[in-house]
Image 1 (tube, rainbow, N blue to C red):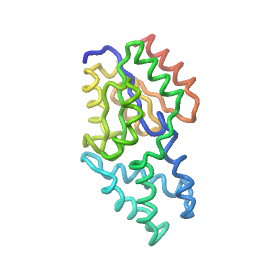
Image 2 (image 1 turned 90 degrees about the vertical axis):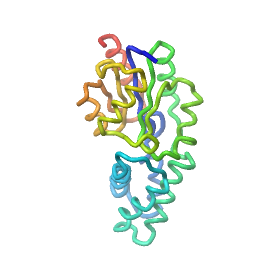
Image 3 (image 1 turned 120 degrees about the vertical axis):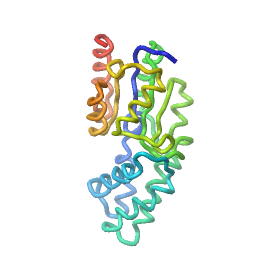
Amino acid sequence: MATSRAVIFDFGGVFTVPVPEFAAGIAAEFGLQREDWAPRFLETEAHFAGRTFATTDMIPVLASSLAPLVGGRAHELAEVLLRRIFVNGEAGRPREQMYAFARGLHENGFAIGLLSNGPADSEEVNLRPIREAGFVDASVLSGRDGTGKPHPEAYRLILKRLGGPPPENAYFIDDQLQNIVAARALGICSFHFEGNDTADLEADVRRWANTA
C-alpha cells in the first residue's frame, strides 16, 4: 500500500473512554484513588517494552506494584483490573464521534493506522469494533508486535505498515503526553487528546492536511 498521508490513532482513551475513567470504580472498591494505581498501570505496560506479552504476564507484575497499597488483595485487584480491561473488553466503550471522524478521513483518502499499547490477547475483544468498522489500514499492538509507545521503533513500524509515508506526512493522536512527545521527536505532527470533544482535534487535522 502506498500513501502520501496517514493519520495514526491510539486506541484506549482516543477511540474509547480513558482506561483510568473506566477503572476508577473498580479501584475505589479497594480504597484506591487514580493517583495511587494509574502510574503503576503505566509502569506495568512499560515493563514489557521490547517483547511480546499477554494479560496473564501482566497480572503478577501489576500485583507486585500494588502490594504496598493493598497488601494481600494486590493479586485480586490486578487480575480484576486487567481482565476487565483487556480480556472482557469492558473498557472499550466507543467514542462515536471519533469513529465517525476516522471513517471520514479514510473516505477522503487518508491511510488510517492504529498504534496501541496492550497485551496480545486484547486484540480479539478490544480491537474487534475497529476491525469491523473497516477503516483501519494497519495496526501495531505492543503485546503482539514486541514494540510499543513511546519507543521510536513502534512509530517507525506503523509508518512502514502504512506504506512508508515520511514522518512529516503523518499525524498522530494519543491521550498520553509522553507518547506525543516521542512522536514529535520523530517529526510526526501530533495532538494530545484530552476530554471528549473532537472539535479541536478535527480543526488541527484540517490545518495539518492543508499544509502537509
